[in-house]
Length: 80
Image (cartoon, rainbow, N blue to C red; front, side, top):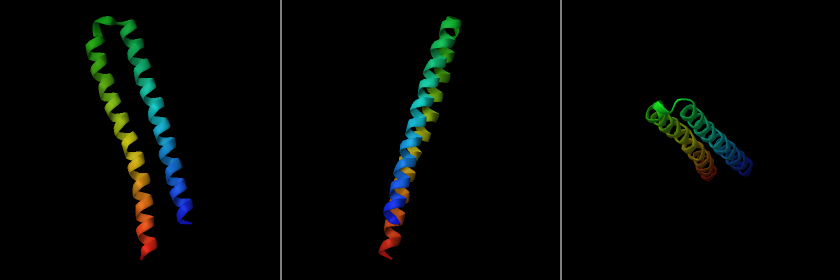
């Protein structure tokens, strides 16, 4: 059962990281489209894009953290 839970947490982290990659691609795509449509707002659009990158990366860092947390918590319960 413990190995199954570890496997599930690793899979969930992988899926979440794949979702973060898609999100970053969407942010970059939107930045390119907005700058192409209105070059005068390039600086403001870039600021919003950096904010989007930061939020997506924060979510991407929570996924492996939760996978490690699940793995180690289940490991410590087995020792008890």
